[in-house]
Length: 332
Image 1 (tube, rainbow, N blue to C red):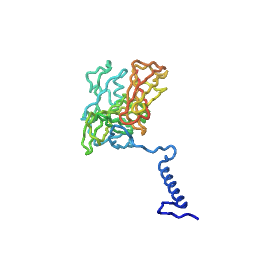
Image 2: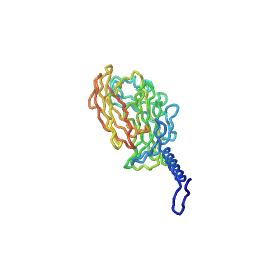
Image 3: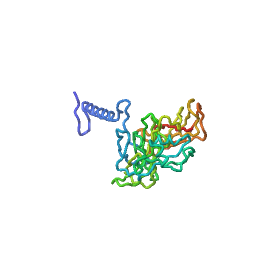
Image 4: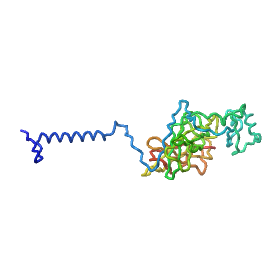
């Protein structure tokens, strides 16, 4: 027969003891379920903990056309664009690249000798041979902008990154954008031109347009982006070579704030020799956001069919580095 509770002495009967045990076990099961990870392959999101204050992204959507444009972003006053002559350039190639006539290009640059172009010389590129007062530059090539975010550093400066992707089969050259910071009330704090770490955006590659705003920058500021220039090269353009990366190794530091990366650059046998090679190393966090980049430049050329080792350190301005991607630019 079950014993009864003696309230004076605090004695519990076996029946009540069993009930109490059941309650304890039930509570433990509830706590365990709350702490159990979700289905395999899905990791619960955790808050980012780092000493940098991250400015809220603007939430600019990726438009169906692939080109993100903010209507509120002020553009520069209309002026002709400029192009720096590279080795191997001809005036007819430059005119074709900018979709203008050779006569329009010569008219804009009366002092240029078409038979003796000088590497490094700057040319004025009219927007249209029929309308000199038109837009500042030819219409930029369309491509998606996948993310834009700004990160405040310890000294109060702000790095802004806008990740752009080339979803075409052609090289896109001279990609620039205007990044404007707005405060919480929509008032413009400043505007600067953002550049890629390379002169080109190769087919299938993603690279960040980046710009640094000096301190002080108020917390809660938001970036807006306006693509200024982006030129899709013709397939016969031979100013860039098909260099690649192989045998890469990335070692992230214990803090996650830096990563040592090394590997090899190579040129296929069918390529011409390269006199200049640049490597862009782009650092991403666990959510796929750009947190830093660094450009490495070769000290010498690279012969076709050979390889060249590289070794560099990449740092993060906003959180732990999860991976580092590489993009190469090689020129004859």
